[in-house]
Every structure is written in C-alpha cells, then in structure tokens.
Length: 371
Ligand code: HEC
Image (cartoon, rainbow, N blue to C red):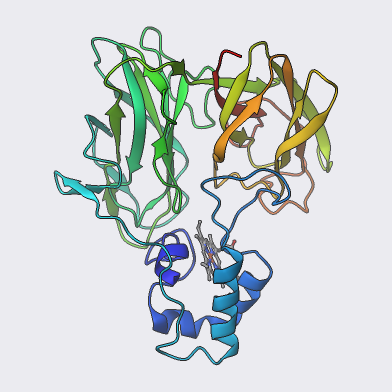
C-alpha cells in the first residue's frame, strides 16, 4: 500500500521530505504516519470531501485507512503490513518508456535536456514545443511522463493554436486553447469519455510548465507527452473555458479578500474537470452551479489552496449542466503574514504574470450535448 498510495511522492528525491517505499521506512515513520493519516493530512488532497467525486482523488478509501491505522496500532509488525490494493496493469513499452495508456500515436518532448541545479529554488518555467502538425488531430488520451521523476514535482501541458501563439509564461496564460492534463504523482493519464475528443489544431504549440525540485546533485530531465488519437472525428468536442476576472486588488496585510467571476453555458453541457489557478496568496476557490430553475450547488470547493500543486480535479463521471446554467467562481486571497507562502505581506497586489502578482482563473474542461 505504501508504494502505490504514498511512494509516488515519498521517494528518494521526490516532492515529499522522506521516502516511504519499503516496510522499514514505513516502520521508522509510523508514529507521524499515524498522525498524518488519521487527521486526513496525508495523502494531501485539497478538495472539501462534501462536494463532488473525482477520479484522481488521492485520499485513502476508508477500508485502507483502517487497515493502515490497525497495523500501526498493532506495533507495525513485519509480515502484517497492508498489501498493495491497486493491481498494477502491465504497461505498454516503447522506446524504453512504459506508458500506462497504449503506445502513443504521437510523442512530443522538451526541446532539450534541462539541467536542474543541485540546490536552490528553481522558478517555474514554460518550455515551448512546436508540434509541426500539418492538419488538425483529435486527442482521445494524453499521458505526460517526467524524464527524471526525482526532480519533476509536477508538469502542466497546455496547447495553443499555432499562428501568433502566446509565449509561455511562468504564471500561465489565460488565452489557452486547451489543457492536455499533465503530470503529478498519483494522477493518471487524461482519458476522454467515449465519443469525446480534444482538437489539437494544425501548427499547435505546446507549453510545458515545469516545476522542478532539486535533489542535492545536478540532474537532467527531458519530459514528454504521449497522445492517443481518435481514428475519426468525435461526436463531441471538449474545450476549455475560463471563469476569470482580471480586476484584482488585494491590499497589503489583508486576509479573506474575495473576488467573483461567472460563466454561462448556453447549451446543455457536461463538465469533465475543474482547475483553480491562483498564485501564492490564493487561499480558497469555489465553483458553484446556478441552475436555470433557481437551485444552486457547489461543484468543487478547494480550501488551503497550495500554488505548488496545480491540481486538476477530474470528475469521476462527466457532470451534467442544463442549458443556461451559470458557473459562479469565488476566490479568496490571504495577503497577511499568517500565510506561510506570502512573499511580502507589505505589498498591495494586483493581476500579473509573476508568481508574486496574482491571478484568478477557473479552468473548465467541458463538452456540449444535444438535449
Ligand atoms: C502527492 C504527494 C504525496 C503523497 C501521495 C503522500 N504524501 Fe506525505 N507528504 C508530502 C509532502 C510534500 C510532505 C511535506 C509537506 C507537508 O507536510 O505537507 C509530506 C509529509 C508527510 C508526513 C510528515 C507530516 C508531518 O506532519 O510532519 C507524513 C507522516 C506523510 N507525509 C505520510 C504519508 C503517507 C503515509 C502517505 C500515503 C498514505 C503519503 N504521505 C502520501 C507529499 C505526499
């Protein structure tokens, strides 16, 4: 269980501070594991569990949690450690890479080997990758793979249409054509439901936003994305919409500064995923559906937002919205000294590209249906 549920992050040089892949390691950490697992702090997951069901939910199912705690309470004995509950499927191997999707039709990689220094903060960086596609293609599944998982914290891949494509920026650019998923420990490949596809336009440019964490020695990485293409154009096209406002003003020292944005879906829609994007002062982000009949409900509430994990919340089943539904997004920011990520509580902050400025974007992946 440790290997599959914890080892994606708790590995030598991974994003977590210590490895948890063997029985001995788990035993050495058992009392803090007990605390972190019992409180729900680990595995980390920032969505309020009262709302929505997500396929990439990292939390332990209740039965696994109970087994883990019982093992620790029983003295963390060898031989009785909880076993892997997840069966590992045989991966498709090609060019030395084990893909969990089938062998991809197209693979795009970083334009060069990136050198990650031994120590220090490596700022977020966007790498531009030309696809050189002569015609539009339809993506059915996409898997992003780190070249060197010891240094890759996470990756976000977005597609921009070719002509005049926007240059990659550290904070992400709202004029995106579409999220192609990305990589984070514990999040599987992006797989479209049957009959749904994502268009990658001719000449498209991919932006790989790379978050690297140094390991103590110089490392190199060349990450890549593999795409499975649909044989024929799908019935429904999946797109990305933005629930966003640029009019942010976050006074120095203030907590709980609130902004709203909304987005109306004129036709019957199915939501595939939601991704809140704020920078270091972001605190909470709510997506609420306001239905034409006056009812409303929360679809996702992220609390304790952490800029370091740009998590996409993928619905376990496409979420239906009747025609005319308004999506209302509410974000709060903490510009006080009580926010441990805040680089400068003495500064008024507004919209900007740098991570020390702010953004408010809800990325919404959806498709329309006839009803
Ligand atoms: C998605 C990545 C990720 C996964 C999966 C994950 N962890 Fe962690 N873990 C972290 C990070 C990052 C930290 C250090 C920062 C923090 O405490 O949030 C951490 C810290 C911890 C700590 C120290 C907490 C403390 O209070 O000092 C424990 C114990 C722990 N993890 C146990 C686990 C166990 C057990 C699992 C699996 C059931 C697990 N983690 C899964 C990323 C992860």
